[in-house]
Image (cartoon, rainbow, N blue to C red):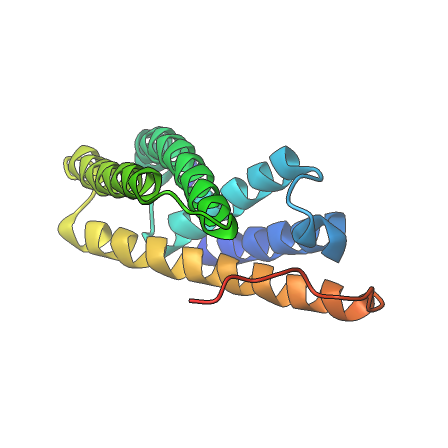
Length: 179
């Protein structure tokens, strides 16, 4: 199989980013339910290309690594969805005039359990990748995960702010919880 040069990888990454930003308008980023599945597939593709470049993976190694990462990312996404649901439930409890301490405590316990499960999944992912990647690549992978997540979050926040600035003011802001 032919090795992809760094220049070609860079071109593909730039092309994927341009496709992502042209195909999804700012409203696509601001409204997560609109075309969410398609957007997540694009993000996953970009992540894999950037990961391939960051770890300098050959195609044979990439074919071993990507299924593991995809499987673990799916499991993590499921747990993150559950965490968001629990967080919403806690927020709803606090919005009510009479919050139930027992209910909040039970939800908090579930939230902590999910956080522990997420950590366990990250450790399992690392363990599965250890026989495939070098120690250096494993370290680069850990750093890449954090950097990619931060870049994605920064992009989302920027687009959300931009979309809020583009729409006219519609009255009272949504109520917030005082901490």
